[in-house]
Image 1 (cartoon, one colour):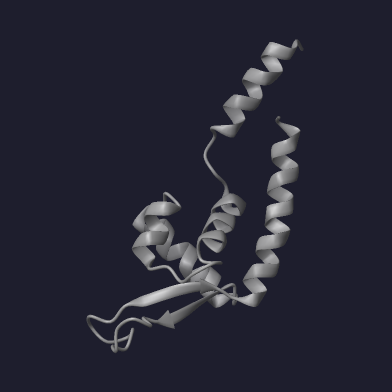
Image 2 (tube, helix red, strand yellow; image 1 turned 90 degrees about the vertical axis):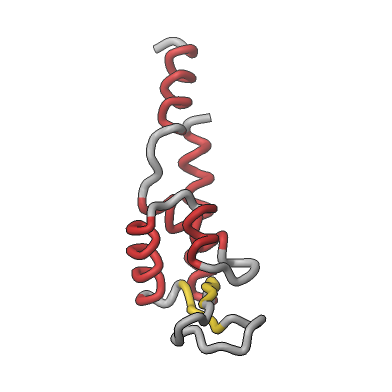
Length: 111
C-alpha cells in the first residue's frame, strides 16, 4: 500500500464510531476531576439518553463511578428536585489510567 492510502485509512478509522472502551474512558475522564451531573456527562461525552443510562448504571454497579449528593444544595439526591453528581472512584481512576494507556497505544498505530 502506498502512504496516501494508509493515511486515508487511518483518518477514516479515527472518525469511526467510538466503541465501549472509548465511551467508558470519556465518562471516567469527565468525572475524574470534579463531580458532574448526568446531563453534563451526556452532552460532553456525546451520548444519547439511553447510552448515558446504560453506561452510568454499568459504571456504578462495578464501582467505577459513585453517585454523590449535590454539595451546593441542601436537598437529598433521591428526593424530587434533588441533584445527583457522579464522580470517578479510586478503582475507576485505576481503570482510567489503564484505558488511557490502551487508547494512546491504539491511536499511535494509526498516526
